Length: 125
Image (tube, rainbow, N blue to C red; front, top):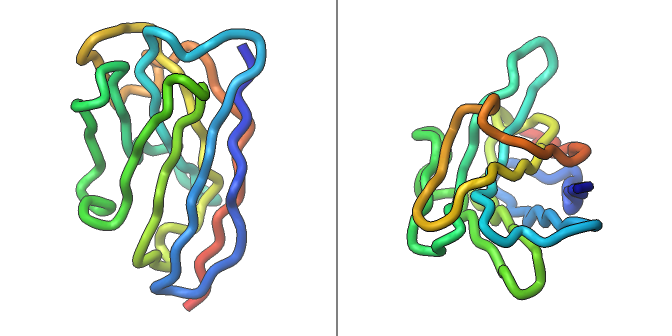
C-alpha cells in the first residue's frame, strides 16, 4: 500500500489549507486513518484520526475547532481541513492507515500499518 499526502504549502497565520491523502494498490476499506506531523527537531505527533465508521473522529487538543478530518471511502481519500493556522502548526504532515474497522481509531503511531510521504506545511507569522 502506498499512501500519498499532498496539499501542503506556505500560508500566512490565520489562513487555511486542505491536505489530501490517497492510496495506490489497495483501498482504505476497513482502515482507520490518521494524520500526524513532525516539526524540525521534534518527535512525530498525532494530529487527528477518523475511524472507518465516519462518525468517529478524534483530535489533539491544540487543533480542536480548527482542523477537520474527513474521508471519502468511495474515492479512497482522506482530508485534513486546516483553518486558522498558526506558526506552531508548521511541520511535515503525514497520513497513515491502521487496520481496524467499525469505530476503531488510534493516536499511537505504532498502531499504524502504512504511512505516506509527508507534505510540508509552513505557516508564517
